[in-house]
Structure formats: structure tokens, C-alpha cells
Image 1 (cartoon, rainbow, N blue to C red):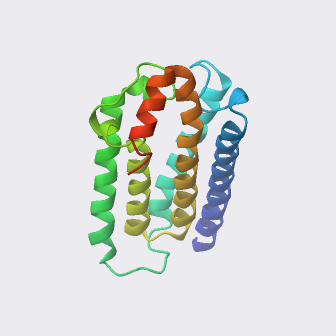
Image 2: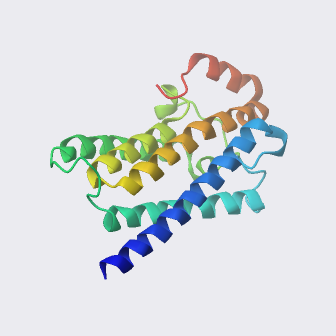
Image 3: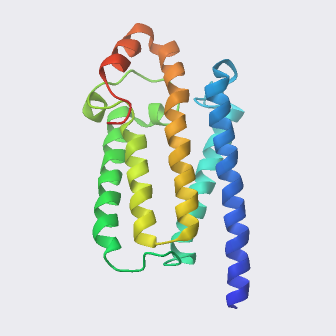
Length: 189
């Protein structure tokens, strides 16, 4: 039974890695070739929108499975990891939630709605991504999973690069208003 579980974990991990690398490729493509970008998508009913969100949902589902399937497989098995991981994950979750509430679901999903500079966006341009990154670090610490360490670090890289892809799009959509905001507001902190 343990051998079977190990092979299932391996298949899921390889699948998860492939998804993360496809996301990295798509985001990298969007930064390098903004006129042919994949993210942000041109519209809701586009292949770019659908494909990106399917990949993100699959990555999140697989990563959630590793919390349970690969629990405590890492090196930091001491319970002290909870005292660091839980607050970091909670701060990240709160920042993501505050960002989504302020920005709205349409803007959050990569579609143009309105330009937002209030709430957490008053202090940084990408509070949701920073919140996601903190959440991922917290989950890495809490779960002590080697698989999550790798996949969550890849997701952190995806979100860091995604902010670059979005900046070009935001300049196109909101022009000088965004350029001024960009000059006076930091990307993450």
C-alpha cells in the first residue's frame, strides 16, 4: 500500500510540475511578447483566459492534495514551524482577501473593470500576489512537505513574473494614470 501511495504521489507531483512550468512559460511569454500575451487575457471567452484559469485551479488542487499526501516529509519536523507558518499564512490570506474585495472579481480574474488605487493598492501595486506568496510560504512551513516546497516556490516565481506581465497591460489600459501610480507606489512593499 505504501508503495502504491508513493507512486501516486510521484505521478501527481510530476503532473503538478508540468502545470507549473507551463504557467511559467505562459507568463514568461507574456512578458517577452506583450503584443501576443497570454496573461492578462484579451477577454473572458478567450483560450488564454480559460487555459490559464484551468491550469491555476489544477495547480491549487494538486498543491492542496500534497498538504495531506506529503505531510511532514521535509526536514523541519519540529512543532515550532506552526508558530511561524500559521501567522504568515494568515497574514497572506487576509492580504489576498482584502485585495480581492477592493479590486473586485473582474479585475482579479485578469479582465479590465476599473482602475483601483485604494485599500491595499494605496500601499503597493500587487497586494494579492504578495498575499499569495506569504500564504505559500506559510503553507510550506506548516505542512513541511518537500513537494510543496518545490511547487509553492514555483508558484511564487509565477506570481512575481505575472506582476511584470500585467504592468504593460495596465499601462495600455489606463495610460498616464497607471504610469503615475507606478512611479509613486512600490510593486510589493
